[in-house]
Amino acid sequence: CQVFVQSGVTLTIQPGVTILSEADDGSGLAPALVILPGATIDAAGTADKPITFTSTAEASELPDRGLWGGLIVMGNAPTYGSPQTVEGITGQTYGGTDSTESSGTLQYVRVWYGGSVIGENNEINGITLAGVGSGTTVEYCEVAFNLDDGFEMFGGTVNLKYISALFVGDDAIDTDQGYQGKIQFAYVMIGTSGNHGVEMDSQSDGSTPRSFPQVYSATFVHHLDGVPASVSSDDLREATLRLREKTGGEFGNMIVTNVPSTGVLQNDCGSETITHDLSSAGTSPNYLWFSSQNIIFGASGITLYLDDDGTCAGLTDAVNSDPQLTLMPGEADEDSPGFDPRPVSGGAAYSDVDSVPSDDDFFESTSYKGAFDTTLWLEDLSWLSDNMKLASTEACGDITADTTWSTSVRMTCQVFVQSGVTLTIQPGVTILSEADDGSGLAPALVI
Image: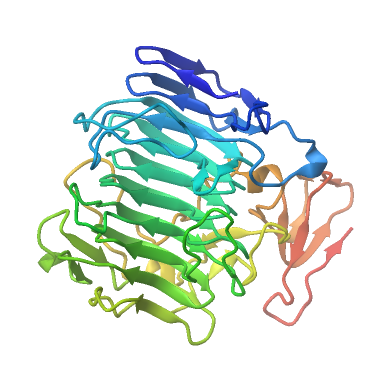
């Protein structure tokens, strides 16, 4: 059933713990873990011992969506119209005036197969952060196969770093109700039927505080034939990113690829300055800056920016070039054999990189666009890793010592296992091969 951690109480979850949830509590409510305002969660997993929230369903039934509720953290940070209630939860409110409040730690936390719909326009997101303050730590967290949104921030000032959202039914990252936090190193795979990589709102009536998310170093992978099919969305307009309802914000060092039709859809803008020029943008939160150096790439003839109702003029330019991710099919989906979302050295991701805000110690300066350089921080954390979808190992040339392939492998040339050497390939591993090694030879594995 739904579990509520009360004000003044700390719930500690040890590294490596798995929380298994039923689909229904017997009375129509989706089980969920709810951290109430004034309570604290200490869920500090590690790289080799992540904490996993998942379903009790049989492995043969997975992956699937909507099999249980989700993880909800509620705090006392500012949001407009406080107090507010959270979708899927009754009788509890959030929001206040403490922008630096800590609700604890979410570190190396995975939330998979949730998002149960319990009524019309009443769904639970994967990880909901409602009125959560900037003293809270959220890093190395993933939401996969949620029926509704992946990460949703309702107001508050919480910052997120190293997050991934995979194949959720609605929006991967959703911000609303005056959210003024920071996000860096975000990886999103939308799939064939997901809705938006981001949906970022403020409030159509101009209520304050205005939402002002600052998003840097993010990679959004769509599906070239993707068509939204969310059962929980109020709007299935096709676009990889959606910015609306007078939101401000900063968006830099982003890769948006496999765009099927529209890169960025905007509507219902207001008095905020909408610009590619940060130096003349004005004072936060009353501007929306979207770097013209962001990469937006996809199908032939895509629309980079669509001003849906004529209120959002200002964005026109982007780098419309292939970001050259190491291994990323145009039809990237949950059943694709493998991925490596790191950009190739010297490609478009390493040119004209934006500076990050220098007024605090949250953002890290990078020499690349997107969520990854050479380190693939998804390993051991992600559903992709657990299901051997990360082809992070490259094989080429001679194997001269006993070797085990335990993750998916990308073969880029002919591979020769030398005499006296054993190559062990673990069950479930996929070996993905290039068509040509660059010199006319077909890659092959030769024992």
